[in-house]
Length: 139
Image (cartoon, rainbow, N blue to C red):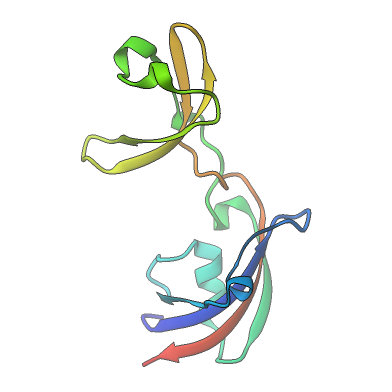
């Protein structure tokens, strides 16, 4: 905890589809372990690893990107959201919250008068599997 860890990982969905792999890119990632830079279950798995260890983990949504939330679905009149008239279902855009922070959303429905946006993380609600190899601990 608190140390920079260098890891390789291979992430899959339950059906075996790979969603990301540093092994395939040939580029391990580096992060500070135990401080929330990674999803909770991934972070927790690395905490007890030693250099050279390889672990396979299965994460429920609560240990990954969280469950899907209805509170993250926004429906707005098109005339109240400038530029939304040019968007189509499936388009990804950035909105800003009250603090000016970007919030990525996806258009999930559009009518002549309104647009519905989904602000859930694209992997929210999904179980994830990882093969993790601890390559180095940077002192």
